[in-house]
Length: 232
Length: 256
Image (cartoon, rainbow over the protein chains, first blue to last red):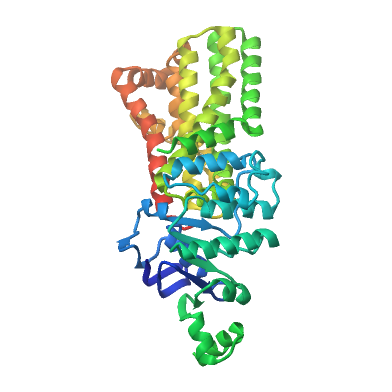
């Protein structure tokens, strides 16, 4: 379980996180939503240890993460976009990662994401979509207990996007704790169980999607969220 | 220490066009100097002056560029179960080792033509020490500044200060206070600049120190003694360690 309590982070005068609270449990897909600059990326990066919060705590399975790094054995992360070194071959990256992580690997997804076709290629030769396929495969490769996916289907081709959605569903069934960030309500409606909507560094809506839909009697999730934000 | 990251950084840099060009350029310079000077001492002194100009500049600018260009990959590595210290150490050692290999390869033609001498050995040690010192300073200026332009700008200012302005200040001090005994003060000042420290250490291993007059004599008295050698080696070592540890301290608290 991930427990975030009263997290604050300021970059100069800009307040990125202003008392964010969130609990994410196993077997649940939590969708972080919100406008640009609302603090979604900062929150995700704080869990990964890339951003060091000014105050507040993050605990994973009852252990504070503070300055540790071992806990990241449990996490699979897919960034929105990453510039891998141009001269690095895909196979070399996989070899480096296999030496850094001791977990078992799920070799099936190498073929599922068609990585074997580009294994020997350098990142400089790959398109943006191909690089995202590699990032997606890396996130799932070590059978993580926690998945953090930043805009997971944004740069993927339709086929890979479907593979990704299937992997998310399968991981959820296996008890994985999944956090995704997305701007697409339809995608969230399709994949997530719960919405955490962020505004100005705070989580202003934190509800299960089923509850939201049942409560309003409205099936269009986007409209319901908008109505909830207006009443808030 | 993650050998896999270090190995990747080192070999990736070693096959980069910049490092190859840098090694070849140094090799051509050392070949030219050794061929035309025809004298071991002259070769060492000429090469020393060139090296003390080029190595700090290359390490500072290329070190900063490399750090910023690797930013996204460093960020990606930090999402894996690996400590910030490990990633920083691998990047620093990978770069310094690759630049050192290029610098040593660049000196080989002169060593072949003149033979392995004490000054050639000192020249090699000083080249490697300069590489470690100035790459550390480049990483320090890059961790302090999040913006690439500012980081590279600070590296250039550091080079200008240590390679040119510092000596001008010393000359000015000597002229202004020529009536006072400044020898000890100059020795302390020299230790504050790794370029000057490297220059004096090699000069004292050659006969050229005889031409340095009274100041040279006091330098020889201090730097030529066992205490002097220990103090100057310690100063060089501190010049490697201090920027490295300051940079790693900032890197550990950096937000990505």
